[in-house]
Image (cartoon, rainbow, N blue to C red):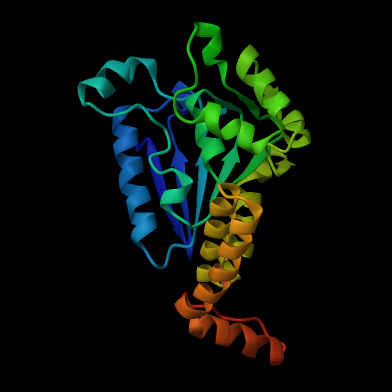
Length: 255
């Protein structure tokens, strides 16, 4: 029996791959349990710096498998695709979106920090077409990522948008050929991993907290974060300055 969630380690990068292509990567209870274990491992592993979400087949994910709904509620679990919301880990998370990312699959992508899309990507929240609403963060996150009018058109109509439109409105940061998608996501993750990992996490925290505050409060937190970064990663800060002076590439350890 094949694994429906794949877990891969590449240096400081971790990759979760949905591997149920015959069902458009709709998630089951077993998949959610496996995902939760891998996410916990990612958060707790000091050697894991960046996470990528990917998928096999023709879809990133179409959300919760409707045949699993009864099973999920019987287990008294909240139906969700991404087990961790971004504020629960300050490590960067990248979504590599191929094919259809609709419903919970779209909400998974919205919960990631950066979204790359294959040129065949189709992204949407169709719940309203069934008199439902997105229940895993779509109504909250989409208007924070794109202009309100664009978000409301998607939410009110339930229509999906293609990769180029997603790029135009800022929902995805880059569109690449389908066969280059994972390669591009890994390249971006590797570029992030070239920097001080504590600094990257502190930047993510400052950015997210800043969005929730007034500008003066956000600026004050930004200044505090800069001080905290030097306290949390003194060796990396010293290495960064030393490498610059010696005109070489720094080697960071997250210390």
